[in-house]
Amino acid sequence: MPIAKRRTWVTVISLVLALSAVIVTVPASASSANIPDYDVVFDTSGNTSGNKGVDVTCPTGTRVLGTGAEIIGPSGDVVIDEVVPTTYEVSAFGIEIGAGTSSLWMIKVWAVCGDPDESTRIVSRTAPRNGLLPLTVTCDDGEFLLGNGYRMDGAGGNAVVDYIKPQLNSVSGHASWISSAAAPSWTLEMFAICAEDAPPGLWIYSDSTVHSPAPTAPSRELDVSCGALGDRQVVLGTGFAVEDNLGSIPITDITLDYLVPTGEEVQAKAAEVVSDTRYWNLVVYAICAYED
Image 1 (tube, rainbow, N blue to C red):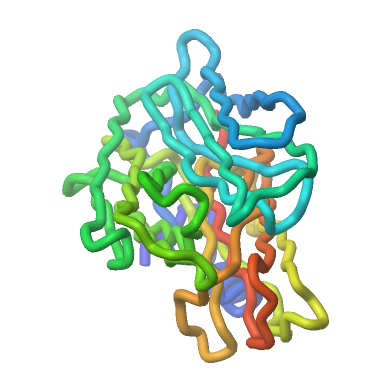
Image 2: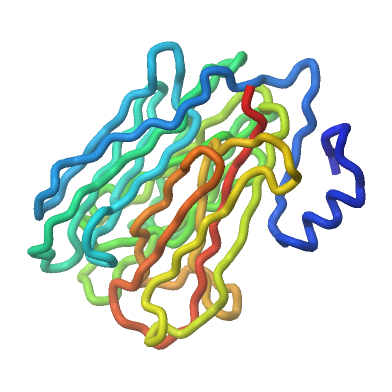
């Protein structure tokens, strides 16, 4: 297990016991990339009722490292249908679920930006069979995952993403059809933002809410912070999963209200679309690295 030079085995073991959350760490080295000009930027759509999108561009000289999106308004009534990264821009689109809502709402899109010493590239794959198969997008050998994104094409607000799970050089995702809707033909496309070298201190943290039944808690909120080892770390990418009390995924009819990077932590909220008596919890992932 690679660790940064100034970390001891005791520290690492303590962290694992405390979080049950660390997936991988990459030590700083002479060949590691860094992330100068780190910045988190966002933009927000108008406050209206009806489907809408918004995009945000990284500052000049920087490129997209990670993504995020948020619905501001009614909880559980709007699907974040896509959060799509390109080299310099992130776009997001929200679609009202079912018959829609008369409430006003906005969609907010986030881009984690920086100027890594080595180049980045974006890889994507599309799941067949109406997006119902689990999908993994893998960076090339020797590359590292910084962030991710997704797009549901043709779902029309009738499907929800169940999980986006980041690992060392790949990201896995899955989407499910909302039980009350009829299923047309649709696809899930996943995006991986890959880097040639790992930023110093690359580390993936996660945490989860407690399992509880829907009637007492129709939504779950959770923040996961970088820097649990006391180091100056910042968020690059995000991820989440919705699980039942047996640890199984997917669990349908639950949608993201937000999954956003805020510099030093990832904030997330998931809410029920259809009332359900099952126990479920929210798992949140933060891909972190040392700032330049």
